[in-house]
Image (tube, rainbow, N blue to C red; front, side, top):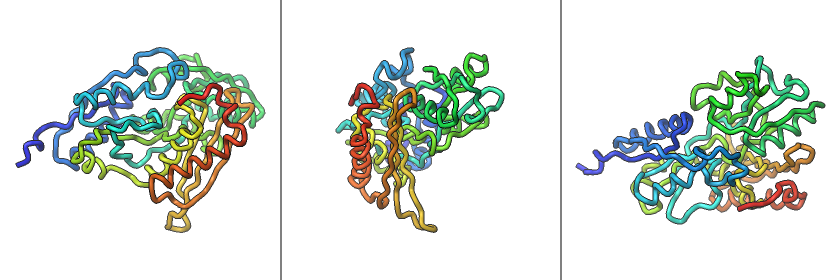
Length: 322
């Protein structure tokens, strides 16, 4: 008998209810694949304890650095991240062994009185911690002939929805995937069409990361990987990297798989960059064959980024950061 079969695998996770829920789903799947027990190891990240807005503390990496450090110190065997929180540069000694099938990538509105986005009154106060959402929400409101006030907020799902329940805000915008994963999607009053508000690159997807030297665990985790999710998210993150923008920049991206009948034969990548007030957006798309390799997906993202930069995207992002 393999002595490792009785040894628990240690899965590092942030402490939030959402992180614990999504890590729990991954843990169940890994138990089924490996036959080994999996224990959750709760880790506090800088992004969890800082009360500053994400744009002020850099956004990129603030929720993942502590987890990666624990991996490198051997305190955990693998970690689960929300993929949109990961920096686009991957450390050489760590590998994303799996990207499970993506959840709903859209943004969701939770508004008072069951209001949809179109029904929000002129001057409505809408909370979000994301410059990307601010830019597109303001633009979408302008298209409807009204104005909204976007308010920067932080906090977990309960805290954010609490701003609406106590009357401080008219609405908040959250990731639909997060609400789905903690069983609270029924609290959304509207799901925002990606034709109006593109999600963050990688939104709705998870990354399961481990040491690049752990071949046995990499092989086991690979069974959780969804190639279509990986191709789409790789293209989106390539766009983000080529724009030299971090995850706190006002950049949205979504790659769709396009089918001809039952055959998936093309991928469409859409990207957007905008000013926070929504007055100016650069929004473009490109379509190509479904990427058959990592390099193909990366090339699709770089191609669209080049077009967006040629249209003036860099000037809309403020200070560009790696």
